[in-house]
Image (cartoon, rainbow, N blue to C red; front, top):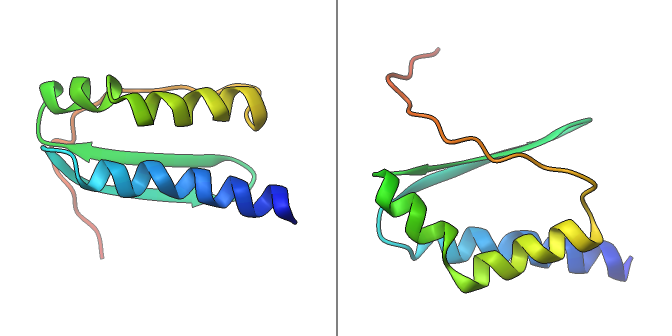
Length: 84
């Protein structure tokens, strides 16, 4: 149980940190058989700044070492959104 609690804490830290970064617009996550987290930023420069943030880099390092056998980062532009 301690490991799950630590994982939850480590996963929440980047969310809280991202919310304080210039250009941050929001974040969404889903977990089932496959986990996905999507963060939204105002610009490519804001993404670069987030990528170079030391605390974010440490969280990624811990994730690679302790929990994830692999992960991908994709950078994409949202052109529009619609739904019901």
